[in-house]
Image (cartoon, rainbow, N blue to C red; front, top):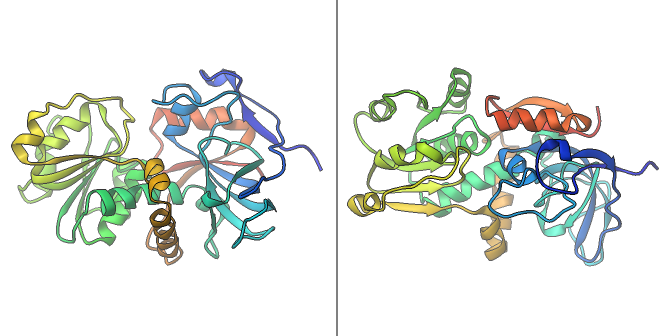
Amino acid sequence: MPIPRAVIADQLGPLENYSLREHDPGAPGAGEVRIAIRAAGVSFVDVLNATGKYQGKAPVPFIPGSEFAGVIEALGSGVSGLAVGQPVLASHWGGAFAEAAVVSANTVTAMAEGMAFDVAAVFRVSVLTAWHALVDRGQLQAGETLLVLGAGGATGYAAVQIGKYLGAHVIASATSEEKRAMALVAGADAAVDARSPQWRELVKDANQGKAVDVVFDPVGGDSTEPAFRSLAVFGRHLVVGFARGMTQLPTNLPLLKGASLVGVNLQQWSLAAPEQAAATTQKIMALGAAGKFWPVIAKRYPLAEFATAMNEVAAGKTAGRVVLLTQS
């Protein structure tokens, strides 16, 4: 059998540091699974991590990518509930832009019947992040209004779908007409132009003149403060990411509104509450299999074109997910 390949850099930094070269991850150890990767999602966080711009620096040499789907090749000792040849999806902080990976069995989930590898690769992380944010951290209730920033992005799109599933009135904010149209197809009740000078007025009009109850914010930058100012008394602003950079929010705003600024960290939650995370994963996988939530895949690239795929994600203009395929 040929030696599997991976996208590797010896130093974090520009994508020119990375190349596709032979890399065999080896046999799985105790509690681990070796997976032949068929598809890997490319996210903005993956790009930040690969280029050394994330808040925590990954160890080198480094293989980018954090979510993928494939087929189990081997099981380490002590692994139960999984089988060689089984289609699965998994996540890991690096290692996904490759033809094979060894990961902890705790991160591996059986694929839903009928789910394609490219869809499975980008399903769990986005949906699980949005579910944890809205249900566990934001406690979104039926009848409340949810404002989703970055509604054309991976977690934003999932938040629109989950918000509607939970019975909320959902307002989607996105930068392009294509992304806003996509959010409306996902179930948003209204979609507003994120770049409009009258953005706050548009949001208010979309909610019958009222303030919103929950903000889902994977954007950051200069989007956070006007969104927080759009919150109702006792509202909740969920900090999910910072695609447009860090922000400085005046601390008098939470005080005046009695509102909450709530951090959402999927990795920390999964480590602190593994049983809850596992149960929630099973729930969203069942809902995905039932067609309640689904990702939109905009582009598929072969693994060798990883740089093109990552540059496209970094530009932030694509409506839908970008996926790398290890097989044509």
